[in-house]
Length: 385
Image (tube, rainbow, N blue to C red; front, side):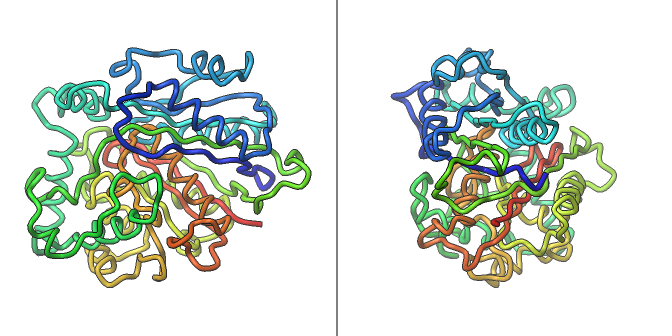
């Protein structure tokens, strides 16, 4: 896989885009990525999306975007893996080039959340859970995260504000991300004053669902345009894993085993250990997911990730920077598109173009996207040549 490179990235600001539709959002991101790649011509387009058939009443996204982005009659279809849909589309692109079935691939993550009123949209997002045993009884994604966080606090005898370091870190970094929703800093005092989403989760512990579109262009190293203006970023590892759909069916409820397997396998493909990367763009729809991911992947001891976040070990200039552009907590959570945002942000870091958020001498990056509470996990390792 050493010759698969990310040649182009494109992203629109995450937010509530009431004045533009799904197709316009996606085309804007695609056009940016294709231009950034030196106007490469893709052989295939893979799309990550969860909700368009329910919220935008639009399926067959492959035909939609190849048409409106003027990509011709290339192979194109949608990958669905709940919140990991964008990362699943990227993995399809990597495998297509690796297998020799394609030379250049465009990957798009797109989600239009704001076309439904809040209650109906919340019902749609519950598709990522077990419908029979979780959704029908009335559990929501936020309620589930609240239960998980309560168990974590109880198991390690922690105060309710123990995880505030993740919110403060994300918002400090998101303040300098031009594509993030939130530009505000979060102090311990403002965290403590915040209202509850679902006890003990407060408003800073849960990411805001939002509209978004981000795109990538992958190609073989030898097909890069002459005088390619960017540093070459290779995809050196790619892996996916799954766990029980229902959280209550897991033998170890507090262990994100699928995340651990995906990260370990992707790092093994790249010939490194997970802790050797320059930065880690993990998935943080809720702050508790960030803590459990770090602990599952061996990057923090069990019950200690919260303390490491408070101590600055995951800050831009810390031991292992995470959420370097704000993550879901500050950028916003564009659901099926977030995996592509994560990779675009990691590429920005590896190109040395992250401005105030730049990780010094960033040479490698790990990304991890989750569907549900790590029911699905997809990881990628990127390296700068």
